[in-house]
Image (cartoon, rainbow, N blue to C red; front, top):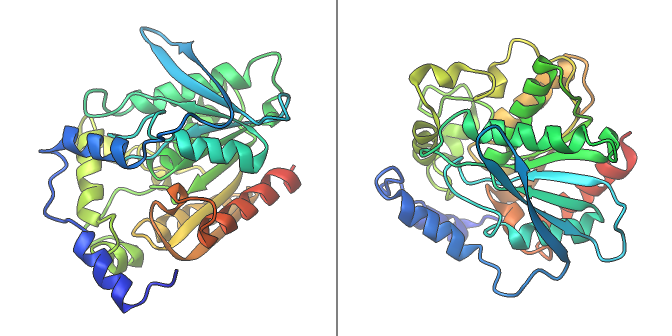
Length: 305
């Protein structure tokens, strides 16, 4: 659907800049869980288990395509600004993902801020990736990281962390409208923050609130594991697919991250989905933007080796 004047006015009315997530976090979490709740059970085979970590367990849910039990894995990190979202709220999205890609999808229920601020969620994602990629029964080239929004940030940061720690290698990553930078004020170097930061549901103020809740201390925002675009070294990164949305404040920084990876010698594909808002990936697959997104993802998964 094109963003015409009527749609633009409706979106502006729904962009609640005055809503303070920091003061109403539980209400926001309840809203996310309610709006993305899957009433019916997933149509695919699923099973839950936990990854053992240092002092806690990390819940994961596996979605298996009906006719393919030996297929490759998509290790999925959900969005929600590092403070909301869960396996349950992404049930429908992961069910569609497994069905439309013919991949097993492993959804990670990483710890959320502010109860568990940076880098807790990242470490959960890292430990889960390590458990799967270093599993003797799984070829590392069969595991692709994928995440949307804050989940895209976590996937990108995880790939940098894996290179630096040298415990395992990530072969592919798919970043869907990822957060990669740390400035969402009027001083941002990215036009999309200014052009799309007030009237398209995800506002620049809301992103600042998310980051305030995610960080442990002020200096965290300068870490490349918090804001991957601040890395001083973009070499030795996975084959990368980046998908952005036209009317998204995160659009330009996601695309810039792709350019930095490409300049450092990595294989990168960058696509901008026209007439799309941040969060469009959660829409039903019949929407043209979602259909195009899956067409791009499937070609990347099948043809890029």
